[in-house]
Length: 314
Image (tube, rainbow, N blue to C red):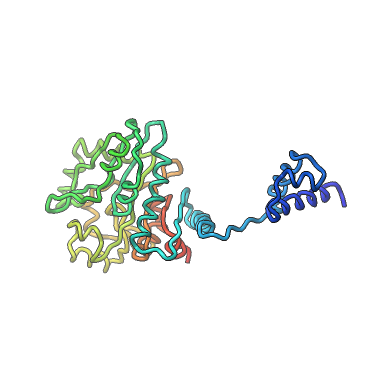
């Protein structure tokens, strides 16, 4: 046995005693007749040499494995998966919201001035509700989506103001209806000086948080008065399975051809390496829309549940 083999053999023994037998580094040192510092280096060497394989028998361990697979499959820069077994729909939403708040906190705690782009959605609102108050008046929260419906009402799921209240930062509303009355009407809204100022700021967002919407009779855009049932049916017939801040997408993640596109005032989502777009969504009713958003590259980060993660990988 050469010198290197002897070192690997001793490292393997030290790792077995540490990880399997549960012995302390002091006990390992005494048993092998070495110093505690050498015992510590042997355990570290075993890890570096690939002699140690760790398996965590816990739902969190399964979730972490799913996170790694999702990042690889869809090129995500960030992914967090929460356990879902045995949870009710309400419990699942709450779990995703809590995890989403933790992810948002990582960015909000930054001391440097940060522009936070904010979309809409029930899950996103629930996540912001879970946020602790973090005073960051230097931050700006910018809306990506017009929140005015045909009748002049606003959706309660337009949530940038809620985040601004949590951070004591500035809030910029996109001053337009979600869908203008006509293409010409849209030109009027989108060429207004204030709209151009806010949309430009939104395009510079350092991080963006959003939900992933479904398209169907029970979808929020219909229930909140932004789409008629006839429009929903036309979108479904055209192949729409989801929407991202008002952009309708098919199962392949590409935008659906619709007359509504020319009337949409929302800012486009443009994930970049240093400017992530992070979506929060879960539950079986969201699977088609989530898969479309991932395949189309609409997001670079995802907070979801383990059953949804498994569905995205099938």
